[in-house]
Image 1 (cartoon, rainbow, N blue to C red):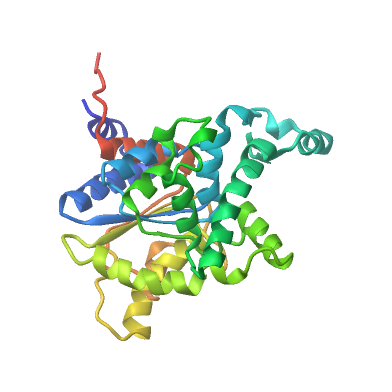
Image 2 (cartoon, helix red, strand yellow):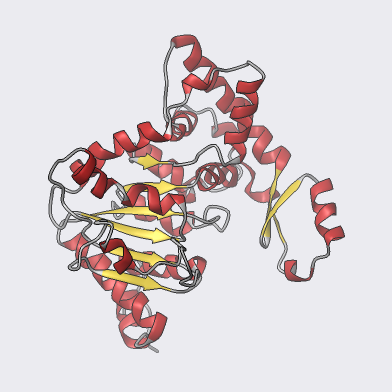
Length: 327
């Protein structure tokens, strides 16, 4: 029995059924020649989604990514500082004093794990700063993710490997030069650091391509990725800008560029946000029909659950790497 057969055997109702149906539709979308964009909010890199996402990229199951700046950089932080991360399974019982001590130890807590400042932020900072300065000297400009690709592919990070390269999803993306958009990149640790260097006059803001330029580039990427088979699908983890930014490319091409465009070929969102007044993260997919982001014929799924549980299960089923004994 493979993982997908196990889903069919065990998961029949409620969120379990949504997960099963979304997984079957995901696989069918790929089998029909479609491609898939992953929109990734939250702190999935800190939660080590790379264990399953890296092979998804390696096996050509994910073809483009939209993510927060935090997810972008934290994939590299895990690569250079994995053994220095601390786990705090009892974080629910922490006092303010407990968290103040974590700060004093130079750690930055993300739920039940903490990122070490010296071994992560301060290791990557001078490496990527060098790339920013080199770009300025040459009069060149790049997207935020392209600077990460540079340090991963030119060996700059190699001496600092502390984690397993095979589960660094950004490294796998760099190897394939995967299309990535990082809307609101400035809202990240290295984005803040970049802004600080700009304010201090040590590097020019002009070396960094902007969010508007990301959208302009996404027009071309979308048209290329959606032209064959079942088109481009949209698999969303969490909500917020990493999801809203890329899904807007379809109506923008249609209404702003006034060009014909294929609709998204698949949609699935894993979210624990509840539907509420004005909430984008908690909006039902059919609301997106009114914005011409999806159509009434788009396969749509919402899994109201914890993405750190659901996403790895779906990815493993799509990868079909394991045979599960029925004994």
